[in-house]
Image (cartoon, rainbow, N blue to C red; front, top):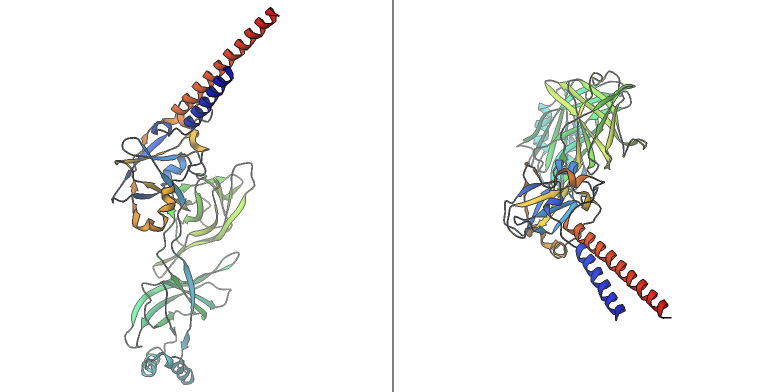
Length: 458
């Protein structure tokens, strides 16, 4: 009989522990929370995780965040990396240089005769008006586009021992008579640095939706065009989010190196160097590491510059990075006399943000709670609703936003690594442990008493 009771008690204890482990968290078990502002009544709401939350959570995978409704009830949520909805393709365009050579002009007319447009008179008129020795004119066919054209990218041949500037105009037409300007007075340049030749060769386009284009390049020293490529975006691109400005610290042994620290949870994708002065150009390398004990790993390199020409700035401030969530970063400015010697440059880290999607169950306002040692190591179980609704998410999801106001919930205590958390779940577990220990002690004493009695009777 006693064995049966012991079995029953043991089963009850296991069930109690299992139920305790599944106890839902409360808002007071998290460091702080921010209200989620719901703008549209849909079953799924979605927000981008803001920068401040990355610095507050304890989990690399953002396990210690939860969403609660107005009654304090926990609602299902899912955290995923933001997807790039756009894909950029490169289309090489045909082109021909318009010259005063009659043979070249006739060849050009023959080249585009198949388009079905009578361009012979228009080309001859164009040739008569573009005989200036300081302008080169290229024309070409655009063809069919699947997506939105964003920019032209040129490649050219030019003496690599010099740095030079020139201007470009781009026009488009369907009939070689009516032309629409899509880019005007765009600065292009070839810049010579310590390590390489840098070509500033992109032309942003306002549109590019006709049959033909005309590229005019003006300047005293002009390049010979080798290729003209068109960048086409199939869908609208979701940009990376930008962090707050980060000021680096000079290394004592080398004034050209600066250090930065960022939350480890952020997947850094690009680094933007803010150039304080005009006519600055420098070759840079970017390194990162997890901690002071690790070696630096090269994550990216590039030439940053800000050059003023004809009252307009040519600039390149971005350095593409190999994606990494390291905390410590180092920007090494290789070029001496770059303009960064007196103070470290201010940079922005651009990263690929996480997306939080939750089921809008219960009353609003909803609260995003974050930061908890107790839940940092626990993976969040995915609600089956997200799997069943995945095909219809576009119709079910509304974009929400998060308040800038932070409300302290459990405070600093829930972030302490060495503190035993006094939570309902822990209280139940400790109660079961103490009760089980007392029960085992009572059973041991009973067995000892019975053994002693049997020895006495014997």
